[in-house]
Length: 247
Length: 376
Ligand SMILES: Nc1ncnc2c1ncn2[C@@H]1O[C@H](COP(=O)(O)OP(=O)(O)OP(=O)(O)O)[C@@H](O)[C@H]1O
Ligand SMILES: [Mg+2]
Image 1 (cartoon, rainbow over the protein chains, first blue to last red):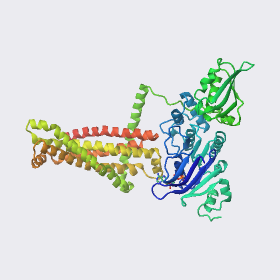
Image 2: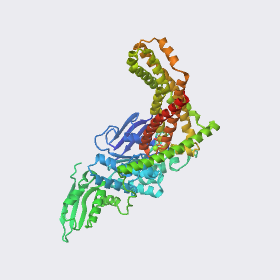
Image 3: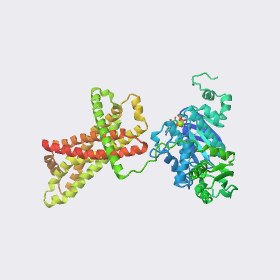
Image 4: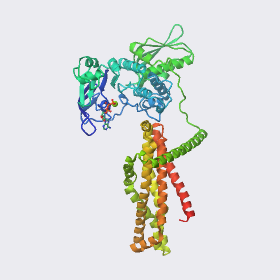
């Protein structure tokens, strides 16, 4: 059984479903991407996989369990939200330390060490004691990733981690994700629009579409780019406007 | 996972240095006593130290960070440790968390302030706040003038909704509270009136107290809690999520777009709510008059018409207009002055309500004295 399984999932907000019949299997240890145009429901699908929202129909299982069921032990995944969602009243160090204080057995000194190391990992060394309101958008993203990594999660959910990052930082982030994946076996599920980054790190992906209200393709992104006959998929990977004639 | 997955062995090498061999796994949940365990195996902290990781199978980020921190701490005490022998996966993580070239922290962690510093800061902030508030008042006055000259520059489309939120939605609670206040004031004094056979004067008392001060003030306090807090939190949230900035970039002035409609809604609705409160307060008094003091409806109403003149209701309404302006201006000022995320919104909303309550009392005192001087 796959690590994360979505079966015939229907997602909506009361009106007509924005996604239906979505099937996703994410294996342990892979890097999986969710693709699609803006507003097609990528973030929403991610929220469902995490268990923040329940599907209108179908089932979602993470490690064989319903992700929405409240657990007694530490959360098995780290999540970075599209807007960072850092706690505004806490410094960056305190943001990262919060889950460690709650769930780890480390003493205060070690927690500070680990939190500082996580921030350094995403290039935020020097900003340990800044408040979220005092750092830039891209820095918030990276701080969000540091917080998501705090508890050494087995699964990492990232909503557009490289959006708003400069090319160098973005490449460094890709390398970091690859290293975490290769050496710690972290499963990574990410939403991304960055094609370069996608081809570099993701082995498999699912592509959602707003008009189809569902998944239109899945598989290796390189294969989809090269072989897909679906003109919507073709347009996405070749950066063509919807007015362009299908090839 | 149990916490004894990490094994540490010590060996003293020929050259007198100490070698600590880590084996097994070093992970977040097993790292809590790392420092103590390593220290315990090093009776002489000055002896050269080597840390051998060749048998360490698993290392995660937290473990790596703590190991680096330990090596760094040893370095400070003289013995320069060498970490060696890490296998591929372990070495990558160790390198990833290597603090080499780490930039120093730009500022110290936030400190708890001493009482003196706190008082100093607070007074300074109070001064800054007063200055900003006066600034805001000036800008608001200018915006009002501009609005009078060009009424179409104001975003009137929201006015109806705002009036509904401030006025109509408050009617049930206003009615209930005013009625109960009338009832309670009359009931409290009923015994005294009875003793002096002055039953009929309950009409004077309830009528005058409700219309002149009690009705307007109670309603203003209620509106401050409902709409004042609501507007401050609303504008505050807009401010911290950059919506106010977005308005500006769209060429819309937050004053004429957000503030003026809210102040106008309050100026229209607070007097209406006050009239309703006057009426229901008197009904409450009437009920006590008829049930406890044996008055008839006609005698109560006759007495009331003698005791009250139009100015009693009028001064109450003048008060309530002033209250409406104060609630609107202060709530919006505090809202737009918000910074610092969710905490900031909470702080400024609280500050808005407190400032409004203070100003309501101030307005009441000043206007009551003025009315007295003018003899109305
Ligand atoms: N709370 C909500 N209530 C109603 N509809 C919502 C809600 N949140 C999102 N939606 C709708 O769901 C759709 C998908 O939103 P979502 O945030 O998942 O898009 P996305 O694919 O992540 O887009 P982007 O790439 O711009 O982040 C949108 O059309 C949006 O209007
Ligand atoms: Mg999104």
